[in-house]
Length: 142
Image (cartoon, rainbow, N blue to C red):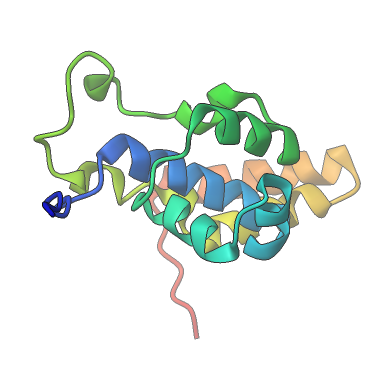
């Protein structure tokens, strides 16, 4: 009986889609088990999707979009434009692993930002953060 050789590196697009899945799931504070139930899969399968180790089929991608209240296109948003025009199967995945929006700190920041009830206060917080970033100010944490 012959076996297929193991795939060395997940496809960068699968990694990107998985990162977008994780970012949205964590932002909504939904567990892997909960989202797995909506697809009738285990939390381990969701882990594999989020790591890009397993590809998400079209029907499951659609179900995930419904469960997370996003369009299917959400999973492909911010995909580097250079990857849209050619095959990525022979390219390393490093270009996709530094998306700041997939970092836990970014997800928590966005989640807490939208918890601010007043649009005016939210706007001022946005302007403050933008001003600090534009000025290149580095504030040391204690």
